[in-house]
Image 1: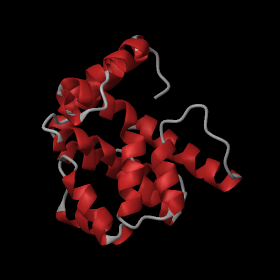
Image 2: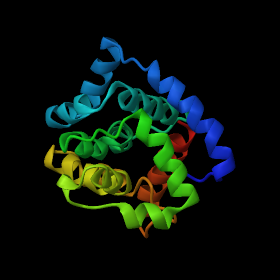
Image 3: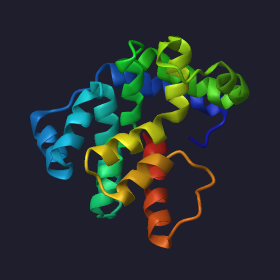
Image 4: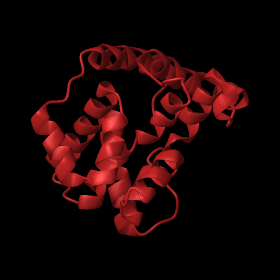
Amino acid sequence: MMQSLRGALPYRLRQFMNGLRAEVSAAEQAIVAAHLPPAAYALFQQMPADAQRHSLNVLATIQAAGVADADLAVAALLHDVGKVAAAQAGHPLNLWWRGPLVLLELGAPWLLRRLAAPNPRGGWRYLLHVHLEHPAIGAAWAEQAGCSPLACWLIGHHQARPAPVASPQALTLLHALQKADDRH
């Protein structure tokens, strides 16, 4: 996210309050199921309601902008699925963690990287690792779930700034994903 620490605080507070009230309807679940292969839909269902809501909001923003691409829709729905890895290790990356982690990343990224530990038995330090590495984790899971190489690439690079070298089409889709993600 391209924000200053000062500008991020009110945004994160609003995001936290919205997350507390997050719901996903059965009709929205059907939309998700229509976009994702069955194994990828199972991944989506592992995400907490606020993360599902965020992903649906990202998808809606992309669609409202007139960008119609199946791989981008998959990436919008699964771009944060890698965060589930922390929950699987017993330390969910929930609303109480997400806002402060983003603020720490903006204010002292060196400290966040220093404290992060890639071992799932590392407790809260593994949670920090997942926060930093969720794009790669999510891309690997999406690949295992049968998603296309482009969708996996988009998931894996959704926080890459500057964007990596890629085809013009891939970069256009990545920028659309990043813009929608930054908005939500």
